[in-house]
Length: 301
Ligand code: HEM
Ligand SMILES: [Ca+2]
Image (cartoon, rainbow, N blue to C red; front, side, top):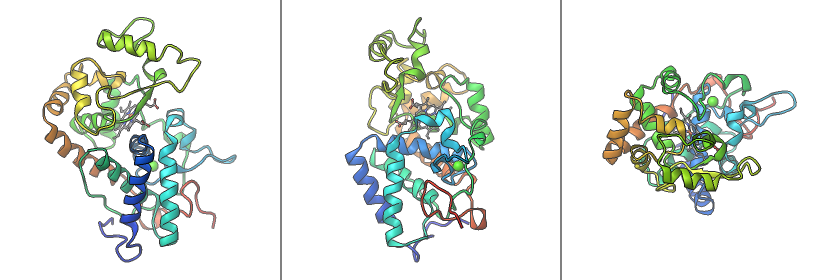
């Protein structure tokens, strides 16, 4: 089973290495926290937190990264994990899994950006496979219905309240590309979006078909701070992502949006608890996995 002090004897430097490099990278590249949190969620949701998302596609294997939703995962996250893995391998070769690095770095970055602390159990093994065909059943798109979202989270063992706190926490930092919300502003505006925001986003995204990089903040008010402001935004009709804004229209999810908008402490506590649960979702232990030599490829023995 997983334990909090898994590396105490075999890699006592683990915590300080992950902490220092996460801090450095976030200072240098402030998009790192959101990038890493999204990669972590996309890893855990597909066959558990086993670093399967980090495997690069090869000529012989279409990996999870070949799935279109995963094309927009940001490079800063992968770079961070490579940096940490390199340092950890120098200090304690062959001991620390990529899955543990990703889980721990994600927690640290949430704390660095102002979010709550939670404990990360350790001892995950890295996956022996990463297959593009495993992704479809587990991740949802920007145009998802609330029914679909509830179903997918339920299949992971998360109830509606967990789902709302995870999505609202996940989307309190980071970016969304124009193509993900273009249908809400062109040609006819989505009536649930505040008209001033519609105008602003229309200007920002005017050239989005020719410039695919155009993006907006998911939380237009406090994009760099890990806080409960996204929930307040949804109550004002200034959510950017359609699937986020729907959480305030559906009677099953609306009460939780209101709860978290009005209670920052409840948000912090419930988010921490839900992330602790995500972090141990379907983890591999013992012979179910390996400690990868490089995080982007499965070991060749
Ligand atoms: C139904 C559930 C969800 C849907 C439909 C969804 C959808 C999306 C979409 C469309 C984007 C924008 C991607 C882009 O344009 O590059 C995004 C970004 C993001 N998502 Fe989610 N998401 C969901 C749940 C979550 C959860 C549970 C978390 C974490 C706990 C999360 C964390 C993030 C983060 C941090 C970003 C910003 C990434 C960055 O700036 O690099 N999402 N999500
Ligand atoms: Ca996985």
